[in-house]
Image 1 (tube, rainbow, N blue to C red):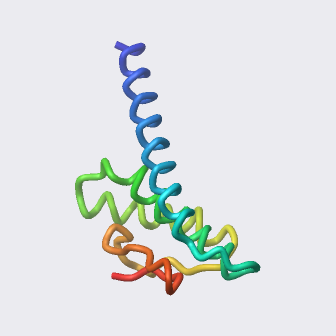
Image 2 (spheres, rainbow, N blue to C red; image 1 turned 135 degrees about the vertical axis):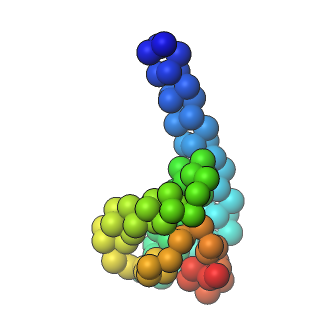
Length: 105
């Protein structure tokens, strides 16, 4: 019913947030703490990576992943413009190279 559906949705959201925090914890420990724009850009890039994998993991089709990738580009890349997400691609095919500060396929 409505209550159990609401709890399932809340439970899924909490798992996604928990996963995102775990990914961010790993990334922030390993991101080069360079002062200035380069360090901030790497942190934002890793945030995007964590967001993609924590909230997009349940998507089971390539089409759904591509639609989510468009959403992520619209919401995260435009916000600051200090890093570029790979264009016109499924972001689930990329990872972050922490030493280079770029997305790599």
